[in-house]
Image (cartoon, rainbow, N blue to C red; front, top):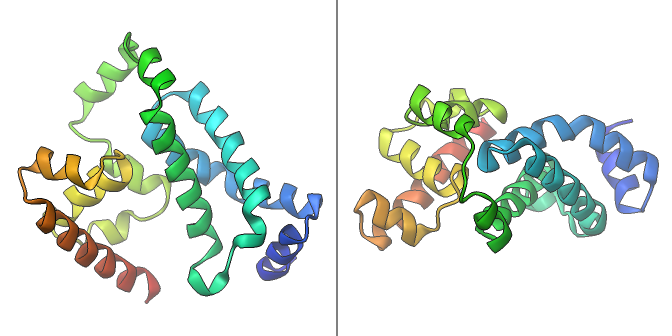
Length: 176
């Protein structure tokens, strides 16, 4: 089934189309969720929530506003960030597992893993270091623009402007 027809069937409430969408996109969606959450069990729960949202919100998808995969990743990213900002998640993370510390010690950042998980590494590598930092904080670590501003000791307006410029550069590379 062609992707456009599959999406249309999903929007019409076809369960088989939903199953096919799940099989096509669940692995990469899980990758972005896990990159943000870093907990397998919680990431699996968020994945299920994300696909429920996809089912519920399918009629609102508009191909003129962006690609279907990007729409799914935005839902996954937002759900992941909502989860890590939730009170329950923060309480559960007060006693961190040693796995988290091993990951931190092995590499200073999991940014390269994160971009590999969604296939953006070749594009991210072409960006300037400041863009890489901004994208890492804002999209992969789930920081707000204000938190990123404080973390990077950069004025909030500068963070907003540079983020917009960096995303525009990334978008231009991906669309080529």
